Image (cartoon, rainbow, N blue to C red; front, top):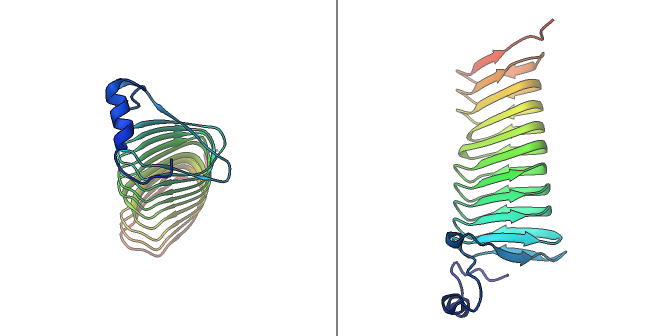
Length: 213
């Protein structure tokens, strides 16, 4: 699985047509099994295919478009293609450079999003998240260190340290310890708790509510 061709190889396509092997395409509701190897890079390059990754994954690189990926934990996930949907177990490092991707995972150590229109959902903790995109979104339970450099949206139960250098971001938190803004026209809402705020931008809309007694 190291080929970077964006279509199924001719021999495989012929075998599928002849019924020699089962078609992996999403259209027939089947998934193509892929065995990860520790210390190796797994490249998913076929467009419009459903992948089922198994084993111990090191680096997983998705160069395909419009693929569906179900995978175990991995040390690194790179989404270079567009329109992919990925469901993963805990991830160490994540980088999304392609546009229109969707990722769901329980946790991530680091997250970098530069691809426009990306949607990331983390049910647990993100240690470090950086969004430098447009029209992307992150939904998480807790983010330790959050940085917004583009024009994106973040929703979380709590963020400990937030820095917004981009403009036109939308940040909605239940609690936040520290928020620093240098960008303009950002909307920041913190529903509960006391927040240390530094605002050096212009036309930012802030709604920070004190702790309830």
